[in-house]
Length: 163
Image (cartoon, rainbow, N blue to C red; front, side, top):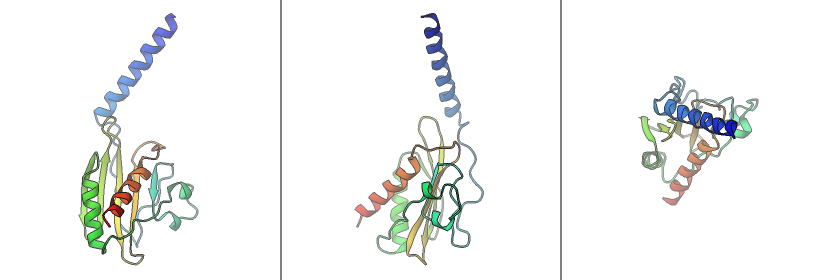
């Protein structure tokens, strides 16, 4: 009984310490310096299962290509109208902060409420494919519990509801 009591106390202290570390912003990581569109491509997927990208097929030998693969977003109207709608959707999502807006490109950061993890999410109107290419990745950790995929699919469903 004595060991169980101390084990419970130890687990509670570890959980409290982890929460404090998160609240102090120590789990945010650093913003990547290589985001954006280069030669018609967004950044490749992460090397761990914590990102999704609609351009995963451009990296056939990438170890996370299958995990990261997600469909691009369809246009609702033209490119600028679709990007405006995506901006409105993103701004309404929990923990969102729009960091960069350029013609045909949007970069947002999403911060979790409790642990303050940050995900970097990009949307790019691809005029050649006539779709919006997407990439969403966690900054830290080797997994994301499917959060990035869920975020993009939420944007997709809200975008399609606007049709």
